[in-house]
Length: 118
Image (cartoon, rainbow, N blue to C red):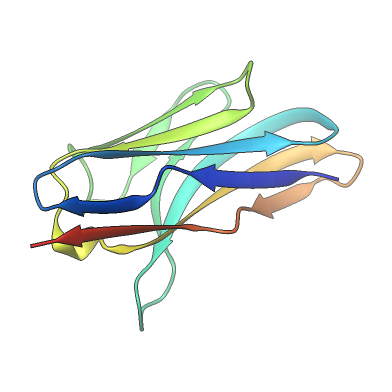
């Protein structure tokens, strides 16, 4: 059974930095795109950043230049480095991945809370 587990969220002051990680485990043949989404209270879940298996990246305009997505294919792990954090970045951050396995599909992590105080 495939699982995604996030870690690294927490509380930080505005202007600070955090790195969140997400590790995929289970019987995995290949991982295609991996991404980070976030959902703030009362708002829709939105895409933050995505990275392909080849390393191409795409970012939401609101985080461009502040956040960096990366992955370690040897560890089936995706990272999101968040710098110059703002209070409006406060949300639950979810990772997802398109995984080829016995049951292929898009998998989601359980989410990790990121809170930015002003």
